[in-house]
Image (cartoon, rainbow, N blue to C red; front, top):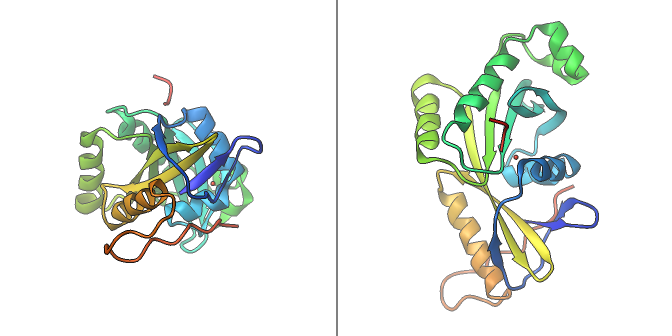
Length: 213
């Protein structure tokens, strides 16, 4: 979980306090926050090896990153709303990037010279919420057809005059449970939970929108 610093428009580690759920930021604010604090956001995704190389290089490809561990392109599709067709636009963006030749890849960013032209990029979808059909489709594409697609929901919580950005992988799994436990810890003001196991450690700061119809 990361706190949104309204002054610097960056993402930093939070402190304990009373929390209230708010609507997720719109697409433009999310893009601004993510690009201004990429390393912190990538760590929240559990993908610290991704290097951000471009913003909106293609329709639907809101952010383009390079996976330094695999030498592959990664398309990040960002939306601040739940829209049932969001996965179609995201897949269209991934297909376009997959069609780029070596010259086009290098023209977007020199780092992408290491990407094999025609290789399918990984796809990461970020949203304030997902239509269940989008998640079912993503799971089907991943399990049955080998398309590397993942989805992360973004929740905003407010305590005092500050906002926190929480990122959870969908569908919710152990990571989602850990996130919920962390929120409960924050709601309790950081007090130890009664006989329910160890209190989650406070997050450590890492050194990270709706498309047009």
